[in-house]
Image (cartoon, rainbow, N blue to C red; front, side, top):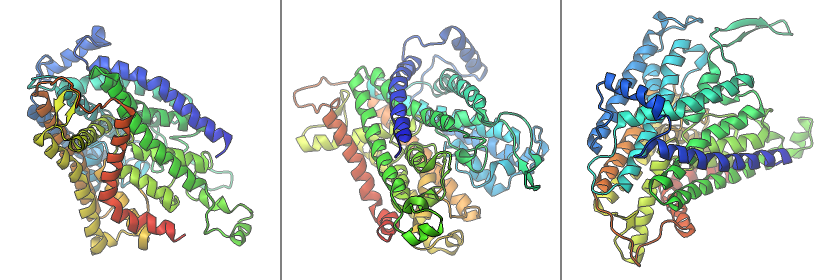
Length: 569
């Protein structure tokens, strides 16, 4: 890497080290039991909105009622977004006269954005009207992210409360997250992005004449406002087909850097907020350290893979390209604005979270680099994961690590004064198994069936990687695409949508059940035999548990895909 690339990485670490603890402190105040910032103005507005919706802002919910609220809200959102897409040809704010979205694509897109996956099997600039982009997709970027944060906060309440039958109120948590966290930060980010060259208008496509005399269609639209929340909410769905590789969404190295800060800010900040809400900041540091370690390893592997010479590019081949540098092949699929190192930094960050935005073509990455991106997704979005989903995913692994440690020392495992017993462990196992079931079963059916193979571009290990990446991206609510796989047929539109639903709601419900179970328990005082969880030793154990569980689950398919392809170079 060049000195500029090292400088960018160092500046990113310093920026996050300053921002995340401060933002974590703010989030802890917003979701704590005491007065919250903005009560004087926003509190009044929120209470009126909630009462207008017939929600008592002072009433808390049992975990089952909380889960039912999440599911009902999400189901309603899917229906509304599906209807908006199907009717967009009859609605205003459609300067390019986009027609109704097809039924299968509308279903897939509605599920995708409501589940915070933001998988896109279409080109945004030639499919969606401005109204659909703003009132449909951008709105879901806010509320789907808010739902994830709400579930994470509910789990934290279950961990820290004692003998409580309630874990908060979903509608209050959802509203507070949007009004006090996502909207203010996204609005500021949109202004900065717009001032930095990201397009923001209500224009349609413009036909211009190039210097060669040809004609070209230049898209317009409210892009900066959507880019801000797509990154902040770890959504990732782009206004334009090329996503963050498009100069209208990501024109400069500064905007690229700002994208990375927005993606990582809330996931890491939630770890620090957890420490404050738990009354033990060391617990938050342990979770943040485990997340950062997994992310750092992913960045290191991807950077090594993408900046190393390509052994397939011989000296003779390099001469034919007009260069003596055998690493020239590594620039395939990369934006010249960011280079190989820029892609190697962006890819593990966007796959380590549930963002899925891309500033290079992942299908063109080296086998090791693409495999590292795939493995980051398969970790379950905990490095550092999506907004909310990253924290509750890592806390589930914390409970598993505590259980394993308890078995090692022969004691009933405890975490934050709560005994982890059979009921919680069963729910942890369900959480861990649901997504691999969807990813591996749907991939297996696709790889041996006619309707699965008809969308495959490449054969051999790379083709397997493309297919597994698609279902891993959908099941883990990431949304990035490896490329090379045509997913517009009914089979993929349907199964990928089902994978998204499984990856979102079959995980949220066990998490809320764990919160309810732990919240009812009485805290027990720590004793000499209590395994300390606020230490670097436990952080190391936590990282090891995550890697081993994921490795044992997915090693066969990784070995047959990216590993075989890498060894074949």
